[in-house]
Image (tube, rainbow, N blue to C red; front, side, top):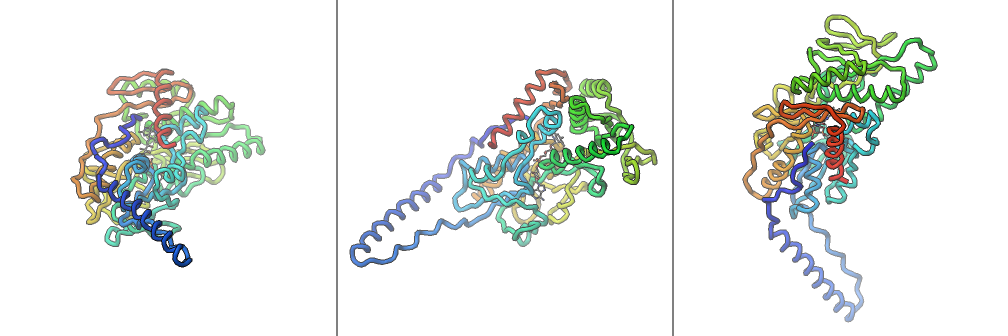
Length: 431
Ligand SMILES: Cc1cc2nc3c(=O)[nH]c(=O)nc-3n(C[C@H](O)[C@H](O)[C@H](O)COP(=O)(O)OP(=O)(O)OC[C@H]3O[C@@H](n4cnc5c(N)ncnc54)[C@H](O)[C@@H]3O)c2cc1C
């Protein structure tokens, strides 16, 4: 995932901020002299220290998505005087999706993909609230949280990502394991896999366990290949399936990259079930995925990784939304609400189609950074221009990756090394 410039270089540091800080320092010195004189005349209790300047305005960032992580980091060097920044995050760790499949394959340690938010926020002097935002009222300029008091804001931004489609289905069946929330995926997966293996051994079942990945986009193909690698290395009694309603895998890729992925899936013995939409699960007796045509696939555990859909929680954010339920923004990433509310990453739908991928969220970071500040300093907003295509590196789990760029593809160990380097560098920025 390409890494943009760390700071917006065209934004000079306002001279006013420095002047205000100097004023506070000299004021402290004057107070101290007065106190010393008073002690000579008659002893009096020490005066109360000056209270710290009260923040006058509030920027609230909802969700520790890729765009917000950068903003928190940049705030460290370039805060606005009299403004407090708050990050609301559902978890105290943010997971970097580019490394999840590598964790499953055993190529990264699980902690390597996690960003420690308390540490990041403390360093940047950003208030962190670990809770889920459940409602946003633009008129009252209030954000309600699941467990803590509501927050007021002058400027807000939403970067809470997306969820796999058919949320109602995967929320209601234990055999389905959603890739989101990603911060808890690895833990949830390990618990479920362990349960299945214990049951299998105790029952001395003659048949092997059946695992599936539902959704054969880039993420699903990557997850299936990396999970198969783990199963192979640990010699687990599990067969792998990859299921999708579409008739092709990884449809956003070039024909060459699709051919390479197909060949590898076949070579690894991963069964493809294309043109099959999962509409239900049968969990009575030997569990199964139920397809639209009524047929079934025996399945003990299915990782749900279907295309990005709007999180249900957005229904409580009283903002204009697209047909698909995402937050509608203009090219400055601003919603049409009467008060300044922005959205970025998967959560946002633009006037032009922008792919739902982390790399786009990263590139929206500098525009969002400029525009959040511009609203408070009275500067013009900047326009976001999405990049035309991006380099895709798909982990195969075996120390190789498929590289796909502008119609050109290859599979090699070199591509995997490149992916590791880019991914590790991204996470390192926030450590
Ligand atoms: C297995 C897998 C691999 C992928 N690999 C890549 C890749 O290599 N490159 C790429 O470009 N894309 C990849 N993607 C897609 C990518 O993960 C998403 O497009 C990207 O994460 C979206 O980023 P975001 O900034 O919108 O938000 P996210 O990174 O999804 O972050 C959203 C954050 O908001 C938090 N949150 C959610 N709801 C709330 C709430 N109500 N209140 C507070 N906080 C909340 C979440 O906990 C999370 O920390 C992959 C996806 C998957 C599933």
